[in-house]
Image 1 (cartoon, rainbow, N blue to C red):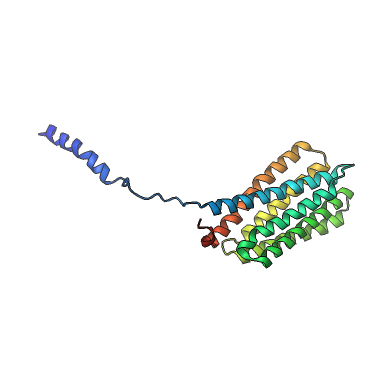
Image 2 (image 1 turned 90 degrees about the horizontal axis):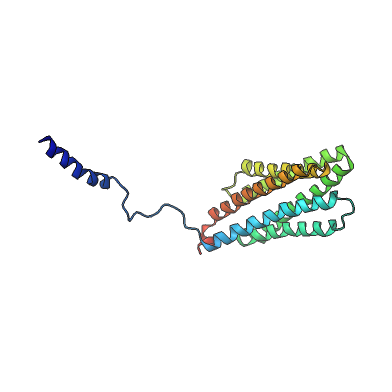
Length: 214
């Protein structure tokens, strides 16, 4: 009798397990990413990587004796800020794109002043420009967070402050000719800027899903 009951339990066990399992026809829960979303996010990421790349190149040109490309590198760096502003125009409009470009160009102009003050050892000027640099970061953060409810001001500010710190590390290592430290600062700067770019672009896609349907 016990043997028959045991055999019955063994026969029923697979049915019970199947009853509690997920049906084979259940829809996957992952989000489908469209081509337009991928294109926007990849373009935005590339532009911010260029931001770090050309900022670092400018530091090299500005701190290397005899470098002749400082003017050209600065022009390319400022063009990058126009490109970033242009990237948001299809979503936020002409005025918003221009506003972001203006804020980012100010970020670069102040950074250029910081490089010169650090080279000359003018601490008072350096302190003044650093305050302006962080004030500009606050302005950029306020602009982005006011345009997009998915971007919290405190979180964007934290991302921008980290970016400033990494650029400062790059400059300090260059002036001290600590090349190993500079490589670390540039690598860290690249990793961070990709994270920041993705956070912004993902918030844009979330805010305007109808613009990224295909």
